[in-house]
Image 1 (cartoon, rainbow, N blue to C red):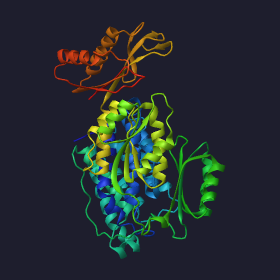
Image 2: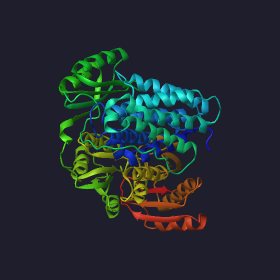
Image 3: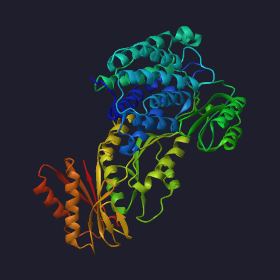
Amino acid sequence: MLQALDAAAIRRWAAVCVRSLDAQRQAIDGINVFPVADGDTGSNLLATFRAALESLLRAPVDERSEAGAALSVLAKGALAGARGNSGVIVSQMLRGLAETLRDVDEARAQDVNKALVRAAELACEAVAEPKAGTMLTVLTASAAAARRVRGDSLHEVMSVAVRAAADALALTPQQLEVLAENGVVDAGGRGVLVVLESLVTVVNERDEPVVPFSVPISSPVAAREAGSTEFNYEVMYLLDGTTEEKTGRLRDVLGQLGDCVSVVGDGAGLWTVHVHCNDIGAAIEAGVETGRPHRIMVARFADAEGAPSRFGRQRVVVIPARGAGIAHLFRTEGALVLEIGDHDEPDVWDLLNLITSTGASHVTVLPGDESLVGIADEAATRAVAGGQDVVVIPCVSPVQAMAALAVHDSARRAGDDVVAMAEASAATRRGELVVADADAITWIGPCERGDLLGFADGDVMRIEHGPPTDEKVIAAACAVVDRMLAAGGELVTALIGHGAPDDLEDAVEKHIRFDHPAVEFVAYRGGQRDTLLILGVE
């Protein structure tokens, strides 16, 4: 049982939240009856936590190596990817945790006490007119109960918090008449309970989350999470380049245009804006006058009501990849591939067209190269705005994309599959052999144009001066393998590039067989022209 939350525990908590919310999304969606019937709260909470987890997995290791730092990355990812009112509220809950634990390496019981209180405060501040019987009530009750715990047991703090949350959730029908009439508890409150239960799962070092108690479920169908039916559109965007004073005025302007107004920040200059309205142009123009709006999303509530699904299949994996050889490898594994020339500029619209043309409701994107991560993110954002569920798993090398694709299982729940693929990618270390295209200063000394450079996880670890002869390439390849296996590993994957020595594969295999007999080796002819060799260690 954990006595403190470190960065690894925070990461596991986010992953368990995604799995738990995915498992209970339909149940939560089905009980939304306040303020009007809807079917989005579970989906919005899941999408928000997916965005938060993706942000955490994508962040450099040194930016998420401590509990406070990991929470900060998680909170910013949630804010940037917040969906609906419930997503905005949980992003502020995470921000409150992050603010309190900002300088903490490991969060102990009393640290978590204080953090839960701040989380409830910021969540309540995100709503213009908080009401009793909602997710804010559940979160506030859990924080108040945890605050009364004086001991140093993290398990006790979280157990008390969860019991209080469950009690508060059970009382929500007594606070809101519409809940009592429909025989359900508050949907957002149930989502909060799932999130807190997920943290108990991590503290107790259990493999599976605890499933909250069941409640009667009704299944109203609509696409509105809150607010008056007078307003037909939901407008959301991110905003930067502004001040707190200006965002206060923006909140007032949006309040005149519609309802369900939220303008909340991450404390570092980024704001999420949300409003239900009829005048889309005015809502966006107000943002332009306040700062720089981007990632604008507009949804028409009436579109989803009674409409048949436009998706013909459930899930696909899409990979933008450089070079015909590597693209062929991904195709043979069942992925849909956007092939990009070794030296061509990637086009976000080509990738977006491939994503939308799949006809799949859920698309996982694995960028097969570091230079393709940006277009993957932009294409995913545009596809999500169009109604598809698209997740980009951070891969900066084709070997990481191969590792992620290897564990893909379409029979698993989408959330579990994304987590498994992301973990496989993150666990794959990468190495490269390239020929320097210019004189430069590296961490281990100067190099000249034409020198052979060996990289391990993005850092130069070997320089072979002069023209890259076959002997130098083989020696450098074996040195990179040794460096990467020094940290452990069971499988080495090699992508042999165009121009590599004919006997490179055999030489590396022989070296591994004699120096690392317990390690498996597999090689493919990738044919990439900018890299003589790409290595992956799992």
